[in-house]
Length: 437
Ligand code: XLS
Ligand code: CA
Ligand code: CA
Picture (tube, rainbow, N blue to C red):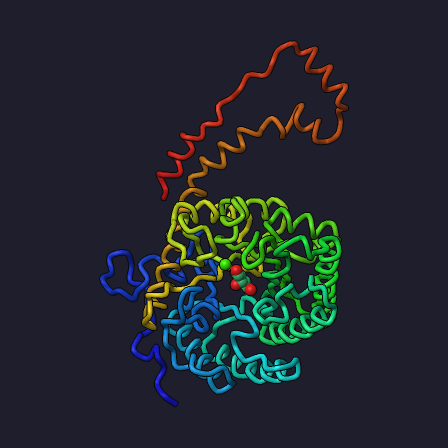
C-alpha cells in the first residue's frame, strides 16, 4: 500500500491563541468544559465525506483541480483507497463524527444488486476503521439526486418504478447506517420539486413525498433504528423550487401528514440564507417547534447567492445561533456537519486541514462567546422582562382561554387608556452582543 496523502501531517493539537503553528487549534479544545460539558460534546463536529474526499474542485465551467489518487477510477479498489485516506484524515483532525452518502463510499453499479453488494462490502471496512480511530457516524444518507434516473425527482418522480428504486437505495443505506451505529439518517430532497409547473402535478408529488417519508419511518422502526430521521430544507438548486423549502414549510408538511413526532430537521446555514433567512432564524424556528435535529455548518457568499458551501467564518453570527442551541439543551442525536468544500484553487491535501481547523476554531470561538452571553444573562433577562405581562395577570388569563374577544374588547374600553409603546431597544441589545463577540 502506498503512503497516505496525509502522512506528512501530524495529529492536530490544541496550542492556544498565541500558537504560531499553522496546523494547530487555537480555540478548539475538545475537553475544555463549557457550561458543564466538554466543548466536543456541545459541537459534535462531523466531516462531510463528499466534499472533502469525493469533490475534486470541478465546477460548471471547468474540470477538477484537486488530483487525488482515488479520483482516477470509480471502482471498489479506488473506493477503498479513498476510505483509508478519509480515516487517515479523521485520525489526524480528531473530529468525533463523519457523514456520508452511499455514492460517496462506493460505486453504485448498474443496478440495486450491485449497489447493495458494494455498500455492504465497504461497510465492514468502514466499521473497522471507525473502531480503530474512534470516529462515529453522525448520519448516513442515500444520494437520490445525481443519477439521471432521478432527474425528475425520486419520491416525487412521475414514474413509480423510480420511487421503488429510491426505496431500494434507502433500505440499503438506512440499514448500513443502523449497523454502523449512526445517530441520524438524513433525507435531502434535491430534486423533490420542479423545474416547471407545465409538466408537474404538485398535489400528487406532495402526496408521494409524504408516502415515501412514512415508509422510511416505518422501516426505521422495523429494523430498530433508534436514531433520528432528518429532513434537510433547501429552497431551490438544483430544482427551481424544492418542496422542502425552509423549516416552516417542512413543519407544515410534517404536520399535514402526521409525521411531526417522527422527523426532525437538519438545518444548513447556506440553505437558510438561500431561502432568504438568517441561519439563526431557521435554528430559532426549529427550536420553537421542537424540530431541531442537526446542523450543516457552512456559509454562502453574499455576492454570489448560490450554494457555495464554504467553511464557516463568521463568529458573531454563529455565536447567536449557538446561544439558541445551548439554551435549548444542545443537540440530542445531532451535531455540526461541515457540509463545506475547499475552493477550486485550494489544491493541496493540507488545504483540507486548514479548512477544517479554521471551521472548528470558528465554532469554538462562537461557543465561548455564547457561553459568555448566557452566563452574563442580560440578553435573556431583557426578553423575559419584555414578555413578563404574559406570565401572570391579563396575559396569562388570555393564554389560558379565560377571555373572549368580546369580553376583552370591553376590558380595553373600560380601561379607557391606550397602552404606551415601549422601546424594543435593538441598538442597546446589539451593543450588548458586541461586548462578547
Ligand atoms: C446539498 C445538500 C446535500 C445534503 C446531503 O445542497 O446540502 O449535500 O446535505 O444530501
Ligand atoms: Ca447539506
Ligand atoms: Ca449546501
